[in-house]
Amino acid sequence: MESYSVDEPVYALATAYAVSALAVVRTSGKGSILLLSKAFSRPRKLLAADNASLVHGHISDSDGTLIDEVVLAVYKEGHGYTGEEAVEISTHGSPTVLRRLFVRLEELGFRQARRGEFTFRAFMHGRMDLTQAEAVEEIVSSRSVHSQEKALERLSGSLRRELGDIRRSLVEILASLEVQLDYAEDEILEDWLFPDEEVDGILHRLGLLASSYGAGRIYRDGAIVVLAGEPNAGKSSLFNLLVKEDRAIVSPQPGTTRDYIEAECEIAGLPVRLYDTAGLRTGGDEIEDEGIRRARSLFEKADLIVYLVEPGRPLPDDIDLERTLIVHSKSDLACGGGLAVSSMTGEGVGLLIDKIGERLHEGEVGQGAEGPSIDSERQLACIRSCIQALEAARDNRNQSVDIMALFFQGALEQLGLITGEVTNEELLDTLFSKFCLGK
Image 1 (cartoon, one colour):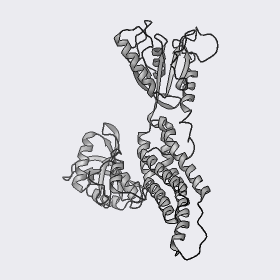
Image 2: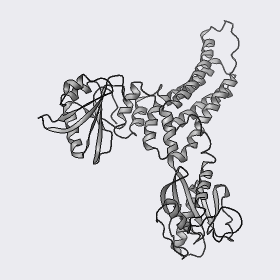
Image 3: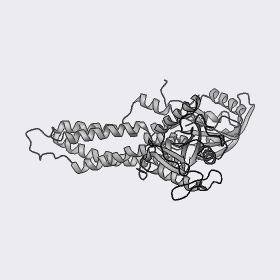
Image 4: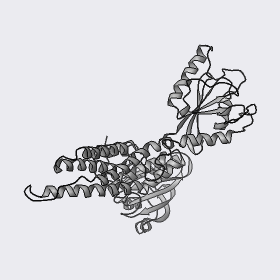
């Protein structure tokens, strides 16, 4: 893959390539303002524009034919998203206009940017570290309000600050080791004592960061919720109520659902993939048996199983109560306590939604809800390696100071890989190539 660079001006469409009222085309790189002035109807006004100012005018083809009326947002070097000289072009969202504009930009000397190249340039110019760069794409791809808010916190520097504090603590420990190494063996120094309290504190903070990745999994990827129960227990009716459309066939005849049906929805603020499954029973035909087998395979993947049971019916012996929410269907017939719903009238569905939310928020999701968090497998791997290095240092506390220094240097290197202080070309190419165009 061709490596990213900051040596030439680039352009990219930052909005969808579709018919729309407006579209935004970003340009960035040294000389961007001068290059655009050659196609702009008010070149002097553009060249004299202040930073973060708007200039109205027209962009034309090389023969003077008008392409479109535009508004240019001007950013001087050291400002704007990338930290480079840049201009953002607001034009009409016509694919024809955009095609003509792209051709003109390339005639002027701009190259089409690759995925994530604007964010790469922001990183290279010190506008953000790698944790903030990754947060940019996390905001774009977020599937819930919670994941978007957490990504926005990382973009504002919450993770960078937390890692910076941890790094400073490790540097202090390493400095005390290097003092020992700087003296000759015959010079008398106090014995170096392993800093248990400091290392335990660092390990605790790293552990919270590591657990926050699992805590955000459901917010990031969505929860899997499976509706289960005997035939004709009301699963399909409840499925339709929860997804707010008639997706599943509802019939008084048992065994209507032969295969599972799935739909994406939001429950209690969480993105959810909801499954309606075949009713669990014996003695069905071959197709129904296959549907039941598929239903049971979904149970293994589910974050939560909502098991509907009619009043007076027994529960199956093999049900996993830790991951199952028992719901009495046909609440108009139910007696006694417990959670009950009526898919016909909607009675109890609001309470059921609350209970599903409570169960999904338990366990992993409830851990690490406050404070800095991570949302990247790359970051998680580096944090785990840092933890391993510190635990190895603690386990080998009686080794010589030069060996101890290696453990702490290794821990610092892993933190540097997270923020980008330690990096390589392949890592950057891989990371930024996952971004969308225009970012």
